[in-house]
Length: 340
Image (cartoon, rainbow, N blue to C red; front, side, top):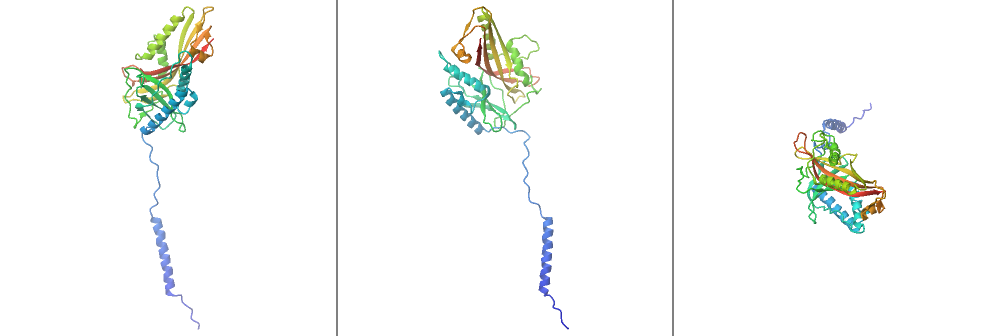
């Protein structure tokens, strides 16, 4: 009788060990802690300041270089890298004025060394911030530079500037490292809605006696505008009439930055058009060399229209305050002339 060969005991033992080991590994895999998954940091409750002090310094240094180069050459094409909006229009006109024969005027001094920076808290574009400069070498008033970044891909550019009025202090704002809140132009948390400030100021410039008009504090810009308008009317009364219009930028204020006391700094643009209509037959007005450069003609026999580009910086108190809206600084540059 043939005996059947039996498998070695060692082999059966090895198979059992393999089976047990596999079971242990499967069990361990089922109980293992899953690998950690990276989670994004939560969005901050308050938007951060858009620029660090070091970034601001770099922007201002580059702006200073661009301005110096363009000012030396009197070439507005050299401004494009760091100047935009009304500032580009104003500086281009100033170069033309400086080059006009018979007593051209040098461009406005625009230092870029900062004594204060007002930086917004925001994560959206366009975004704008303010820089209060050191006093210029000619001892004129410090400037308020308005810098804008139109999109995330654009560099910050000088959008406009204003002269801080003598004796005026900027309202207190948050530290630049923290940033100031950007307020909605239609907010009712202020004494006057920001998107209505420039239109109200335009009414104030006309001198209209309107009991519902917004109360503005006295300021040198309005005083100068009223005096110049009256002088022009008196100067042409024998040959015609004079009139002025004040038109706020239809897009509203450029920016509204909150102040520590609950108010806001409101920055905007306005266009002033001063028109003389000649009614006396044979009368004419002789244009200055700069006006001739802008208009292309040397005299007006029918009408003369001068267009000024204005940049205005206001402080608007919080709602319920018993103080007036205050113009902190302004700049007006003659940028166009039409003569017939």
